Figure 1: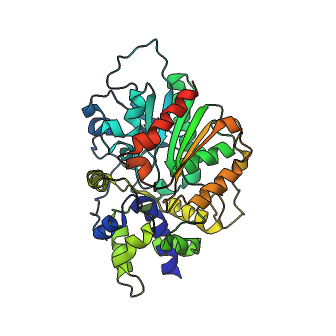
Figure 2: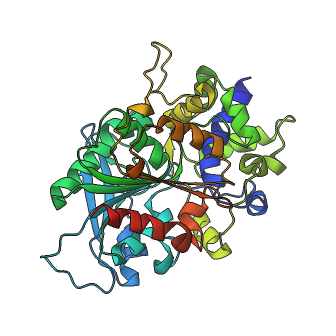
Figure 3: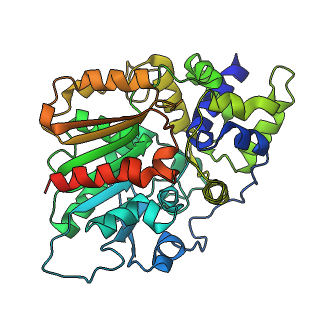
Length: 406
């Protein structure tokens, strides 16, 4: 059962990453992910502005915000479009863009400028802020802790709700003096929904767009996702023993090699099992290749455990440390007048249609004129971030939704 528990934990987390690929692409990769050398918080890494924004002719600023628990998070600000002349008289509406788990802000910028959401929003007159989660390559600094030490990794997505989003919202609000629009994908939707349910951020928010929303994970169409639902916390922690979960790190690589030597585990079809029935409809090979060059990114093992709890328990709750019954995030408490745009896909094996419908049921008393819902029959999880047609299918709707809030 210990092996089954850890496989579920690893599988669940890799779901968020590998679902970016079509099954035949993922299976070809198998365990061929290159092993990443240890990332130091002081490693000279080219910033996201230089690597992915400025070269396309956009202005971009590298910024940092420090949370009250000491994590130093990287933000990239794109204050205007490529062809726009900065006009200090023009008040631009800020948009915070938050990625999912096991990736970072780079995932929004893999497509050409005319096809990726941050630059589309900038060209439409928005002041764009790209967030990078704690522990990823651009957000590995801390006021006192070092990522090579276990104490740095003692966090889960509860802490992103409690510390990270408030710090980012406060910083952007103070810099702009404006209420904030928000875009989240996958885990980026989960943490903001949890925040809204507790009344956090709502006074600073203008509107939110939730792409491939994750709140409930009861109906994932993946074999390993089902295994994860039956995992046990203690067994996962005991079997893992690594505070940092880095899919390209040597400990995880060694674990996967050991796992694949077990006669009960078929690694030749491991990634296909993770991707399940779901094909991303609209990814091109060049974008997938870029994705594989830059991702996945690390998270904490505690975060992996928390996600496993979310699957197993069927509710959105705070981290279960085994001592007290964890508090539930009651999504029906989300203020009914918050402008929300929700888009979900019929082929999404992670953000399953039935689970999204459960979320929508929590929002059934939402003001009708404040809730916009889009269903895209052939879209899967990664299409929302990297599809070549996402501009026409999704992003134009997001842009129009934000403009309606002016």
